[in-house]
Image (cartoon, rainbow, N blue to C red):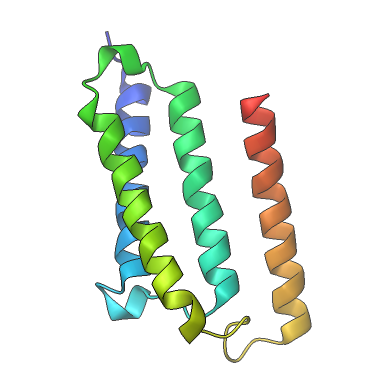
Amino acid sequence: MIDVSQVILIAVAALYPLTYALRMLGVVPRWAPRSRTAIATATLDTVLVLVLAHALIAWWAIPTPLWVVPVGLSAAGVVGAIIRWPDVSWMKPGRGARVGAILAVLHLAVVTALIVVILA
């Protein structure tokens, strides 16, 4: 039986990759990333959500397409990120380069560490 926490995790595992795909594909122009650091951090955040979902959700109790849909949405987002990559600068316009770089490196380090700990 699936409890409420599983339902919440399933919803997050489905909705986060959906918003990632919409951002990277530029479906909603306001949500489109304006820097490569934004693309990199959003991509790694999506990987973290999928790793957490894989580790914490009882997938044996859920039909397989519910796992395939978030992974497919994430893959579509990665395609959008690859297409968008050459058209954006490294840093978000209006933010100091040093501050942006420090925040991006910290973000990527923390998320990468979380993924490693979860997979270990």
